[in-house]
Length: 193
Image (cartoon, rainbow, N blue to C red; front, side, top):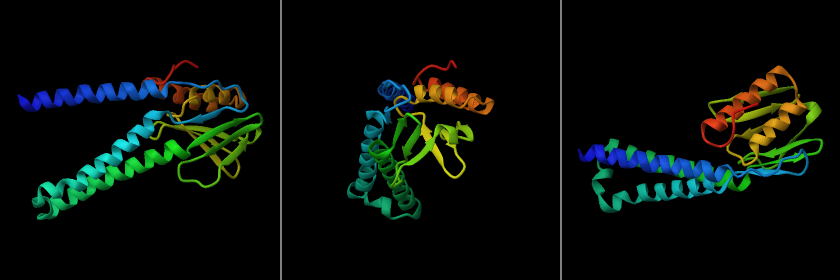
């Protein structure tokens, strides 16, 4: 019975955390095709700090119970969890700080979390538009480069509408529709298009 209670409490807390994450990510800037900047909301940075704290917590376990280090399974699980939470936390912090998409009058410019220089693409250079439900990214493909836009960026719903207007192909419309439905499924906007 205590296990069931713990699972219910965890499920409720997880649902509340995801709702707060979606609410923070919903704040949409005005996107009019020129000068707008899209970034992650504050929730992704909070998630990053939680991941780093989780890694530090796992790394501190041997201080309280040294038997973790005695078995290969315990050691590998301990190290694996610390690396997982630490890696996820660092990635979230890098995304919150560095990932940005700028809408320019004649195109789009984006910098991913680990890229040094932004990638730019003019609207008339876009040859294909794709969406991946697995990653949640809308990808604009040019002849020799591509720009990826996360569904988690504030303003990405309006960006999708702009892409649908600027790239009126059936493939682009289907990708934008999937992108907006994905966002709506996580409580980050509407699904109509």
